[in-house]
Image (cartoon, rainbow, N blue to C red; front, side, top):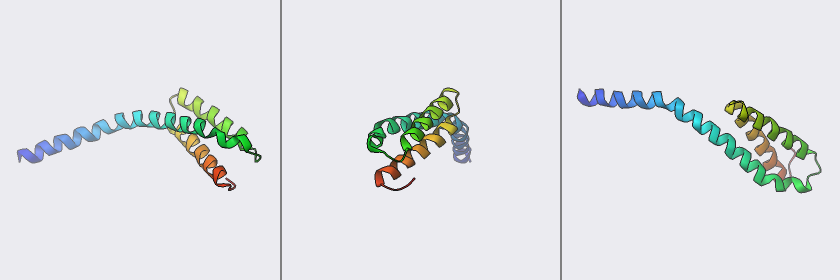
Length: 94
């Protein structure tokens, strides 16, 4: 009986602490994505499709979302921008 109560306490504590860790991870992921976009801007040097302007706009929007604390929006924007860069690297049309 003591083991199951103790296990229940640990599970409950872990579940209650999860949202706190998730918020920190979102901020980290947002910043990581922004860094990855910055690192991959080399791909835009020879871009003739007009994606450079779209990526720059996305970065500005993501930074604004990050500054306002809307990490989910920042992640959404940066993930799409990274996908566009990946497609551009493959030579495809994003």
